[in-house]
Image 1 (tube, helix red, strand yellow):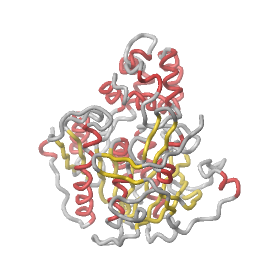
Image 2 (image 1 turned 135 degrees about the vertical axis):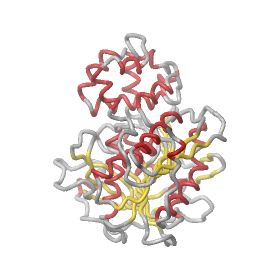
Image 3 (image 1 turned 180 degrees about the vertical axis):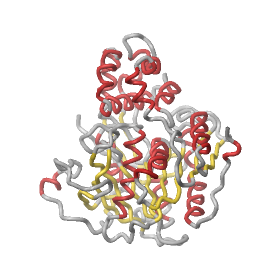
Image 4 (image 1 turned 60 degrees about the horizontal axis):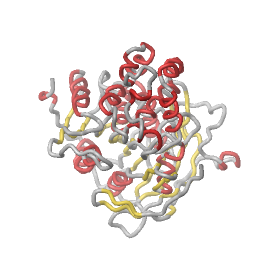
Length: 438
């Protein structure tokens, strides 16, 4: 299918992002790319080079397609695309791509310039949906209705304007040939942590192993930043992680599926989860092959190369009971299969304890990532001794549609989270409301 690019202006809740082509100045790169590598930056070398998680495989100059809100010029950053070593869901070495953004604004906060390891929100499962690609074109469109734009630029601009360095991962399998294992706890957490490692190893940035790091994400990114916070004490103790912001996270993939079953706008995400599960846990594939009917199998195939727009069969088959041979919803299929149940249980957050202060933001009426599961995760972390502040926005009403409560809740948490981050970098005591949780 031919891909068409758009030049446009996208309005979202009063914030206007103008799509314009502007090339930023690259940072100093590693070894020059070979001709083969330059032809396709996203194809990892085979075999992967020796090294540890976060080691840089290759870099290239990147393009930013953006006129920053309220500014006449481009977003205030220099951009470098990085392929780095990480670990997959089975703890095997893999290659992941990310983008490092060096702010042109000075850091006026306490101490040395911090690094924000930014975990992006849902973009899709097709290779064209990778954040590092969307940063260069802003909008990806495949006719007739599959489209996504890089809405994370709103938060990225806000962070960069404060003088914070930012690195944003594509996650495992997004852009690269592997299947993107959407909402996989370990793969996402590893990709975020290793993006920070890679950024601190880039030459010419002024960053180092001592650089203060803040984990940051909303929605899919909230799950990724939460997973990174849980995994960091054992997986990346070398990073100087100071705090983690976790906004509107998916806490439990199976609960997410059951809660949103029947919503056509969420049905693509359910298919992406299943595609990722079968890619990461091969013993689940024959189980799902037997449980899914022809419609279910077609939906999984159709979703695999799409971004986060409505498309195809989801409009007619939005209930997962229509996807199965038994007529049962997917949650019943998962509960009835020990193999599937084990794979889904592996994705649940809240059973490991972060070692750094955490701010969690959620809307009580969030219709995408439900508040009860988020509150349970917070309570689990509190029980493990973590410093947790749970902000639950009860003012936003329950709204469904393209711009729903989950989307709207992102904006009030943006300013709050960044001031909270600055306070943690200044060494101020972290606020805690664990006493209000069971």
